[in-house]
Amino acid sequence: MLVVQKYGGTSVRDVERIKNVAKRAIEYKGRGMDVIIVVSAMSGETDRLLNLAHEAAKFPDEREVDVLISTGEQVTSALLAITLREMGHKAVSLLADQIRIISDSSYGTARIASIEEEKIRGALKEGNIIVVPGFQGVDRDGNITTLGRGGSDTTAVALAAALRADLCEIYTDVDGVYTTDPNICDKARRLDKISYDEMLEMASLGAKVLQIRSVELAQKYNVPIMVKSSLMEGKGTLVCKEEMIVMEKVVISGVTYNKNEVKITINRVPDKPGIASRIFSSLSDANIVVDMIVQNVSHDNYNDITFTVVKADAKKAFKITEEIGKEISAKVAMDEDIAKVSIVGIGMRSHAGIASKMFTILAGEGINIELISTSEIKISCVIESKYGELAVRALHKHFGLDAEDVREES
Ligand code: ASP
Ligand code: MG
Image 1 (cartoon, rainbow, N blue to C red):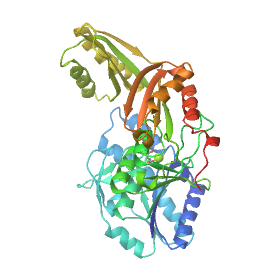
Image 2 (image 1 turned 60 degrees about the vertical axis):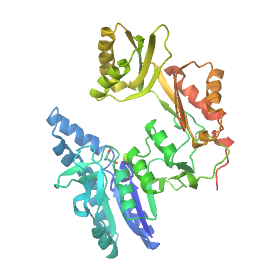
Image 3 (image 1 turned 45 degrees about the vertical axis):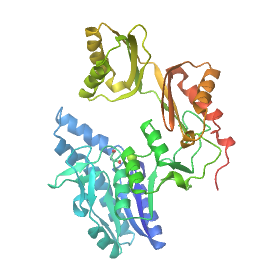
């Protein structure tokens, strides 16, 4: 049996915590399992290194930035291997270059193309616990690359897929995936299981437990991921394919909340072909990702177009839109006081009336809905930001997610 375990930054924050990681690995090994451990950098380290690069240059060279920020993970892998050996176990750290975690050459956001099995298999056969620094790859010319923030999750899933591991455990500082943010709703509860699709929606809506790419990869290669806390014992949350989830009565798995977007509206846009295309091409040319887009039906050959972007892009997006607005004599307005609340659940595919229930719950709290968007398993509403947390709690309650309303699966 082969297990891949990944430990996030808080789990390897200092040598004391690294010792805990080593103990768990030895315990698994004692139960007859082969163990590969993927580690993140110590918490805060990647940010620290990035700041240094930006102190050195306004636009630091991307290749060199990857050489720099990949070192955080090398430090923790070496420390873990040293600790394991000190505890009397065979262990070896293997860097991306040594096991040939080959990626493309997009520095900072590289994608893994392949992983060579032989070296790892050989080291496992010799009885080693293998420690791999997460987040790093190497391109075909031997340049060091990194896989994007949070990329150690992806390293772990890629290794589990390439080696057909029996188990992929991701240890973090929370004990699983929650129905909603416990900081907002004290009735939030840990989910026993969640499907890949739901996890992807939740992650793209802001749940920060797993890197989105790691979930996509896990889904593609059907690697079940167990999300657990390294700091306390607990059952964790299994992220897996839909078929493994026994559908309970609940249709909704989670409620998410995002205060990080602004709404931009162009009023009275002439209703003729090409204008939406111009607006959104200009935004994408400026590398601005647009989230929701709503265009209403036209009245006397004019219509309004509203969209949302993240706050960091607000100014740039407003400026671009205003320029186009001027040319077509349309007025542009921006609203920063918004929150997006969403409900996510695969049960929506087979249950009617979920949207209307959501709107009724919000109406019951006197909350006005400004924008709505839906996907197959998600409904999002933009509301005034001051009602955001209230909306989350109301939806959580009325969709039956509150802790006391649901019996845990045993
Ligand atoms: N250390 C990297 C980061 O902070 C990768 C990771 O922790 O997964 O983004
Ligand atoms: Mg992380």
